[in-house]
Image (cartoon, rainbow, N blue to C red; front, side):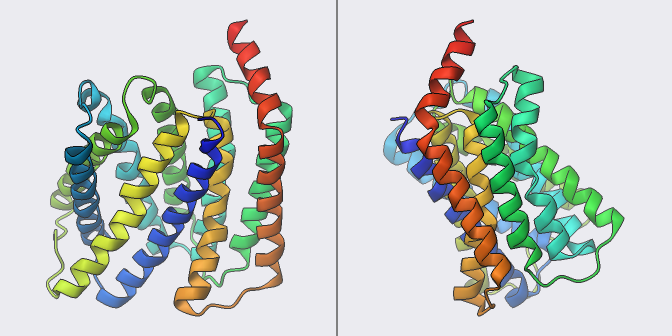
Length: 298
């Protein structure tokens, strides 16, 4: 079971990146407001998770009460992230977003008293530097302090979600957790749209556009969150966070295949550093887990 954690995290990062690329395609194709696209995406994601719940017959006992963590992510995190991206450059947003794997073990250390192993700190640092290199290779416009501040707030909310959700998976199964969290997030986004006087659907919405946004939502929310929460039942949260650094690597690969963007030497160097760091993490996983278990006993 523990051996499956890294594979689940790689799959989670891959689907997250695919969803981000497809979301950009959706925004460019439809010209819709980000908030409206977010509503369609979350509706599709909740519908997919609800269908999976109906098929598996998983229990929702206790899930609704703990589902509030979905307000952090995708609720607040994605609201801030989209608003910040509209004000700052994509490069700035990518670099700042790469800080999440660093924030997660720090927050876990403060809130949960889970001190990361020294070897894991090195892995986090190496993977983060690699993801920053990948992010710096992207073309971006001028940034802004306001936009960067919103992106940082998004990253903090996402990191808090990662830490809090890691404790909830001990009492709530991953599928019910993902479903209830995103129902909470959907309610938050709808209320936000009404407060901000934003439309739930854009006026020129066509069936093909809605299908595109829905597909992006399934890839960006339903699958990665379900995979991620399942991975948390098989590996420590600090180690799971290191695999989030794969998102910009997969994102660049998706942009090359889907949008025809070019790969630079920074992409190759950063990608190699991220993958190399995660390979080192996998090779030392058994030793680190024994150390963490010993610290928990003490």
